[in-house]
Image (tube, rainbow, N blue to C red; front, side):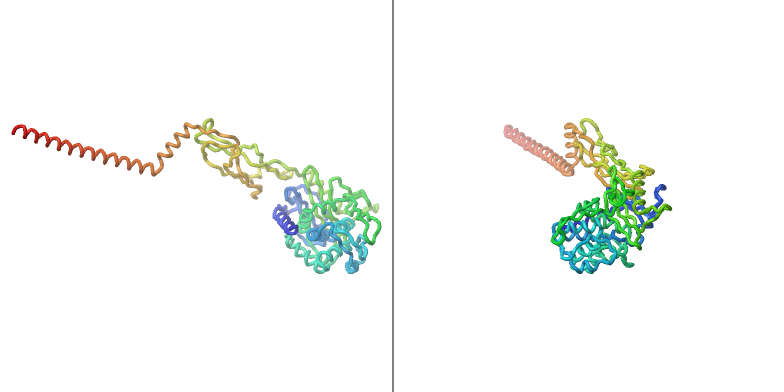
Length: 445
């Protein structure tokens, strides 16, 4: 059931995305050094910034977002996982690890912590074996799942993101994976933590504390990149991939998700290190929060149409209002005139009318694209006039075909009756006249 729901939610998100395909759509976009990037607003489902986001790139450890998703979809959080020798031996030298031990037993939740917070490649291999029995089978599951999510330019060869020339994805595809993973509160909780602790195990007697590799929320290594509105999510880094970062931030009801791939690590003349993935992401977030806001396009109190009401006791019309409000995320340079409202409504109705009665529909379009279709409701009650209603009933009755036929039948019957009575009276008069003549004859005889 969890897997089906996740497929459904991810598919809906993929269909919701409103893409802005060019970097200079609004004219004041920030200058981003990363070769591939996008910025997405979660509540509206809009991509508000995109630069080469469909270009294949190396994802490094941002791959672990999909690994975590599959672990969440296929396991219970309190399920026990045993660390195998085969999983540990498959970790490439020089990888980032969480320090898991052979034959150690941990929960799925703690495995997720090891996977996402310190970005342990050992945890990724353990997760793969636990879910699919082998790393090879898990990789097949990863690629199939990516296709289900709508990813068209993704091919993974391992669960960790360790570099391989044939291991690639795009910023857009990573967004689809991230949106699916965010359907799980556990993912958001772990990815948003500055620090996480896992409990002692059968092998390790003490708690282990891990600090996030996302310097936008964790200052363990440096505070230079802390961003007060950042809420997670996942970093990645290899020499070939450069600096990769999927990050989220929330401010004033706007929820942003950025994906950057291939950013550089630079050094100033004084030798200060600059991790451009964090710096570019901050620029994108600042630009998004500064330039976008939700504006009310349709209010439930707006009268948008008038319908004639017949047989009314007090007024002969009723105003229609939208059944719900529409708020839309807009750049500060965008104009409300870009919205169109197409209205279809009853031309006239008969009283009584109840407030809230559906009497029409309105379709709202933004730059030619339908964003909402809703009912139009009567804004007030309209009472019926009993006298007018009675008169109308009489008129309606008289206008019925059967009434005309009945009236025709009655007229024919009356005519026949009158004809019969006339003929009958004439015959009777003849009979009476004949009797009188006969009586007169008898008297004379």
